[in-house]
Length: 297
Length: 294
Image (cartoon, rainbow over all chains, first blue to last red; front, side):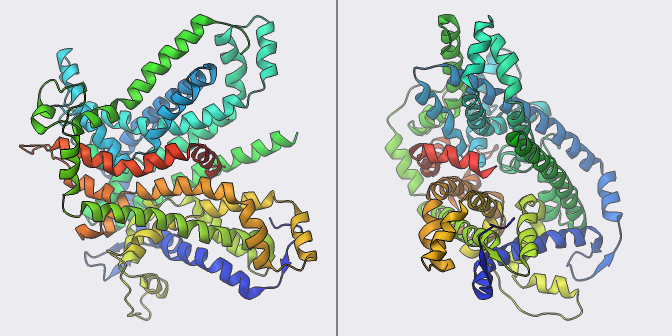
């Protein structure tokens, strides 16, 4: 879309304005993406000197690896659990903060700071609490008779990673939910109250339906976050282990590409991830379009 | 407030206090560990109140090799990503919304197709580009002619900053903003004889001010907290960012003497800058967060 009133000509100036952005994107984003697609259909020798076209062989190989199928499964568990946990917590915090009057801004401040923490640091902080030998929470669990050991027990490791990742993401959901709750017209709430609906009833029958669009938007964003931004948390907490229990797809792309040096396999995985992101982005754009249509009614 | 419901109010406060306590628990324990000596930290159970060793631990943390240098690197990375991205985004968004030229549609689609390319999905080829910026030439020529040019960005600030700044989210944000700017402003500016550069500098830039501050907060935190990319392309300890540096010096599982007290002091020092930015610029942070995803 171009502005109705705009400039004509100025070819040199336009080139100059666009050049930095286009150059950076072309060299560091667009061409590497094409190269990933190219590498995914090529098989190359370990030195990367000779590559032969192999069609979809890399994809077939990747999709028949038990390790890869395991990582798809782990990604599903991790993504759905951390999305559900962080969205529910964010929504609950937003509902409570929206309701209270005293201490509103203090609560808000105390809920915002985790966003500033690096995911790696988040991993470290949670490891310190849950370390089987000296973690404070781990020792407490031990007293309750739980043999807590995320270094050996896969399900414990997965739980720890989910908690750390959700903790990092709660702030984001909280901010969006709070903004949308504050945008709900007061007159609707009052009308419901006059009809005799209590605070809980109003929440479920009036407020939640009204914030459904933002909930859907957050769902997509959270899934994308869980897919890609979990790498540092996994790397600092479990390195995909124990025995592949927290080996999510992004971690495998990195591992196969840089540690195992399997370029074709890693690129095929990159392409699969790219297709997933594109699908999610398309869904999101359709949502935005729908939102605009609602707005103009 | 629609009606008074003291029980529900009390319930909300109770849940908030519990929830906030759970959210702050990791930081609280980090602070406690950073204020004790190693013996106290490893005692079972660990003390629950602050000790007296904070200054000592912070001194030990600061005295680690390259620690201060790595903090400076983090500042350079965070500021670099912020400045490059805002500058490139602002000018590019100006070009795609306010000018008519032949390849406008092409430029537009080239920029916005990258909205769906997070750095993680193109990590291996991007690394190859950082190892030699001219590598894409060889990909394009497909071995017909070998181009023998070398420009290595590994272990450099440019290599650290550029790939992280290579995304169109900023351009998208400025474009959305410019589309809401009334046409009358440009008409008036044209009547007054202002050219494009003057219009961008004296009208568009001041209008965008709050958005720029909001974006700055988000990008600073984003740049500061980067992990995968710096970890891959930096091998010299003096060029690492502090987040990666911390991850590399962490007590391992098998360490006989895990130095958690200094590790936690380092953690606090490293997290100080982004936490301050988020809390001091809270209003803009919230705005930036909401803007950036629209």
